[in-house]
Image (cartoon, rainbow, N blue to C red):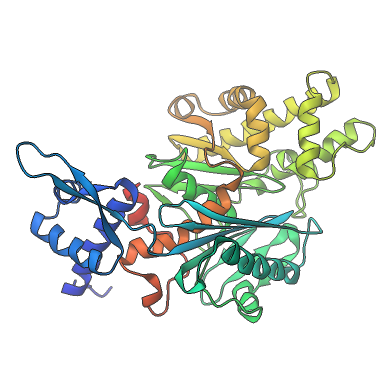
Length: 419
């Protein structure tokens, strides 16, 4: 292995990255506070923040009294420096949101998908159209968009090309970035699996904040998870780590959309839950126009319907057993349950889920973990996707558009650690 000698330029980039990250996650802060938090000298902090102010990434944010001296100037990341876009490509629709650098939402556009297993071409067309719409809706100039993060179903390979493998949807090595470019999208793009973007969002700003070892679970039509270890997302050899929904919960059990039998997704994914409810009703259709309204109808019926109550109780049991597997495998300090179906189920059955997890997990690891609902709600995937270009900004300590080639993804571990 070749040794790497740090240059002055490397040191400067690391210092800019460290201070910009501190200001993003913990600001506004004074230069003295930045020195104490970063371990850098006051002189270095003064020089580096001077550069960041000159680059318009950082601005002054008022004064704070000091002990017996002159008031200290507070600094923060300038929310007006640019905007970022987060996109949630779900199995029922595409959600596109635009944020400033304080993560204040400035625009939202949603496009439905007309099939639970949409063709890539349909998804690409909806993403490109919604992206144009949200920029217009927010009233911003496209030149001010630092980047677009996209949370996708399935495994997202990053190099040398962005390829999406979503077996449950029938997608095999879909060149998603190339297709978006062909559709006219020219903005910087960053890609990841939707469960992982949700995980980064919750780790930075939600229920995972402050945790070094956590699992953020996504339960919607499909089921996935982001495994956080030492503050960073664990990806595995080809970024497919976290396919929790396709771990086996019942040997030889129900047929899953992926083609295997007994997957967790075949019991707790929204499509599977509604199918189980339909069968329990003797084949009668479940009320509702879509999966979300149908699951809401099941939950609403549970207090007065033994059938609905049984399906809901069994689903909570399966979900708790699946969480127990996560506890036994990864020993997290925190498990966060998210996704639109996870939020709906957890809202009425969280204690049942916890009881099931306790029954199937090893006692000591279970006692050391907490199980809670996500805090970012149903926007968590899009919100987390918007943090992907911000992660590049924080890692570089500079506008990622000025780096060639711009990094596609790799949520910054430095930024996560700062959280």
